[in-house]
Length: 303
Image (cartoon, rainbow, N blue to C red; front, side):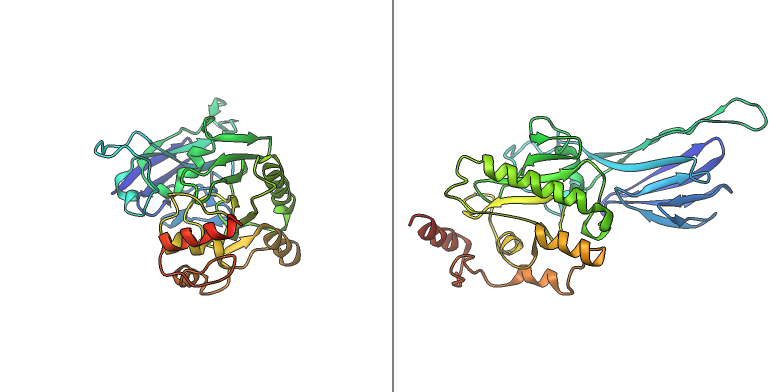
């Protein structure tokens, strides 16, 4: 289902169309005054896609707005209240709220001398990929926070210890990273190191820290995950391969790539790594099923 809103300010008029199942908003400029999404000028009668984290500028960048998808966790299906990991099918079932949050700069109308203000518009949309932005604001899920990042426990942990380090700064994905983000990513790494040091089992459990090359959830997040993979939420080949193949990009490699190239490059065909046969991450032995793999892993950690 698509949702529409006409968004007005005194000097500008645009149309917003939320693509509920795709996680973005189409912006169409209806008035004469310039509208842009980040640095891309829309132009009267034209339409561009706006994703979470991007900035909508109305009237020559006088009124900057951002898009945030807020997840409604109440749900409508009361048959099974047990928490489960979202799938793409949930994108059509969940209800969310898209809030146009504005930092409004007021100016005086050249004719009347009275203040000119933009208005805010709420639109109902839904997409499960925006769930992290809700979770990171939830005090019950926060295990650490400072002025730059927050650490939450993964809602569907794939190991005994599985945390996510998220920046408060809105960065949708690895592709949006640039050299100026190096300091932020280094801070995220330092916070991750601190989480491991404070873990009660840090002396006996090994950890890895990294990013999924093609994450399913919007907003960049650093995984801090113990290598026991002892969790009922680890259920299939995709889960396993996303943490044990090159699909999982180590934090230090991502930082080095930014410092060297100024951006993060994901190799072509990376998504195919999720289809590889199951292999033990310790001895690399091929294992036919997830239950058999979990049982095999125990033999390594019981020694």
